[in-house]
Length: 284
Image 1 (cartoon, helix red, strand yellow):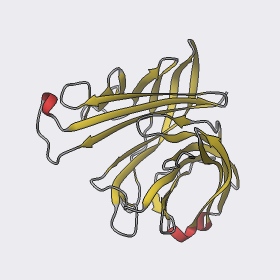
Image 2 (spheres, one colour):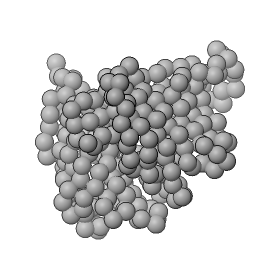
Image 3 (tube, one colour):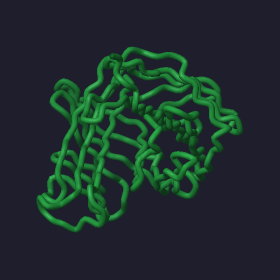
Image 4 (spheres, helix red, strand yellow):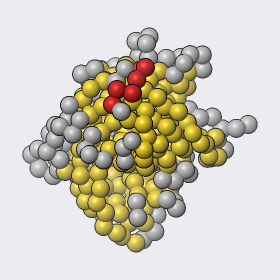
């Protein structure tokens, strides 16, 4: 039975060069986790102030945590890593392994978000293999699969007219990976970007005019109309696929609500992946 899990840790600094400790720290942390099957979607959220040990990240040995949720290296090297989190009615304990190096997104790790200067630094590890246990409604089950990790940071918000994004990460049959996103605007055409990642880890930026992202079907989700089936094409890679949500109701009703869940891939390439969508307003 296919399923997907999500674990995200956000950090926001409300002041630059914050060196304050304890409750005076100007760092704020937010954690999200979710588990999605074809029949159910469960999610949970954690919030923390920085400086008090409730949440944080250490580089060596790597560990990231908020409350009891953790993502940490098992030895001196970055991988393998252990990942554990959950909510009232679900939990998981996974091991992520890889020998592949990290992948630079955008242009050498510099990921543009508009043609007006907005950008982030962005690296990924899309080559994890996964083993472990998922527990749903008190019933544990062993799982295996693939995982994709993103690390992204920026000191810039989106452009004032940009209202949300649609972001895809695809594990393609044959070993290639694909990251695509579009940033939607109230006044301009969407901004497209992406990287094609060969099985050996070579990452090639895609030109915006080579990318097609076309919603094919929508679903009513949390009082919104959300696209849950898409056509994706990359002209110079002979890719033309349809991706669909495993569960259209993969809505995270968190402090900043958004859609995120697993997708299946068919067409010129098969595969699996994840889709994240933000900025779809509720109907009045």
